[in-house]
Image (cartoon, one colour):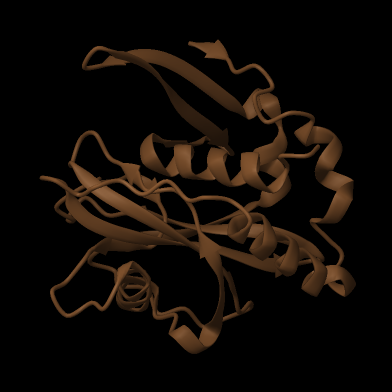
Length: 214
């Protein structure tokens, strides 16, 4: 596996541009909202894929933005032991993908709709192993918050500073074949934990969008 080239541009130089402090919180949220709304989102036809949605939760802690992730237990049906966003498969009663992400988030970590501000959506992502079509919903969430973790599904909550994702040496890329196409798989290391698959791809896309002009 090789270190990834700086596909995200000069991200390390962007740490000082607006990930903190708290006084600029509204400006940061609006910057994210505008970056997501000003682009045409890639929408994938479901075909035989299973529809799903995840919440991409951002929060402020100690004057810096962080990302909240979950580690799955070994008792869940899919993605056992993996680090991922809160979320899951759509139910028939879900009005849309946002409803799916919000319902699953509440079921998994006890965070209600009132505890977050929706900022926008990222491109649909397809999981290779489970054939899920995942829509990521980006939100600023309340923090600190008395999360109520579903211990059957979630082993632990993981907080990672957003600026850590800007460090090139934490990212790895590996080319592989998907049908007749060559694609790159990303993985990210933080304090001995590895984030990979669709979760890593979703995070990479968020960074590419947010710091597109850097």
